[in-house]
Amino acid sequence: MTLSRPETGQSVTFRKTMSVAEQGFFTGISGNLGGLYVDRRQAQAQGLADMAVFELAAGALFTTALARLAGPGWRIEAISYRFARAIVLGETVAATATVAHTNGTLTCLLSGMIGEDEVIAGEARMAPVRVAEDV
Image 1: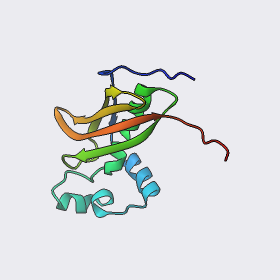
Image 2: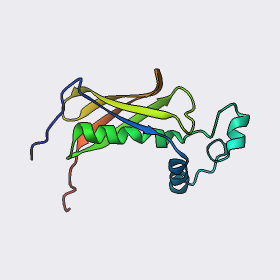
Image 3: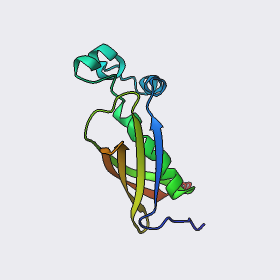
Image 4: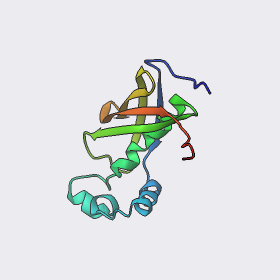
């Protein structure tokens, strides 16, 4: 099977406003009940306008951009993020994945913007899906 492969420089952006609904779902998935994420008063006491968005929930937006960029037959092999600041509920994150280079895998640079500010930076490597062979 031959996989289609995006070209170097090609990018996809996925935008989403982070809401209380996502916060609730991620709390249920992760079990994280940290006050910064689930208690508005605690978050405001730390100087935030509202509760902080779970970093991995914000980072998950890149999975949509990566899937749309690479297409079927590709999976995330490795991913890393750096968060410049806390993201709060109600902010819209524009998650962009850009192909940096291709070989047997795809290496993509990740940039998460809120307005003109880059709040997330990272890198992902996409690999072809391989089915485990019977032993």
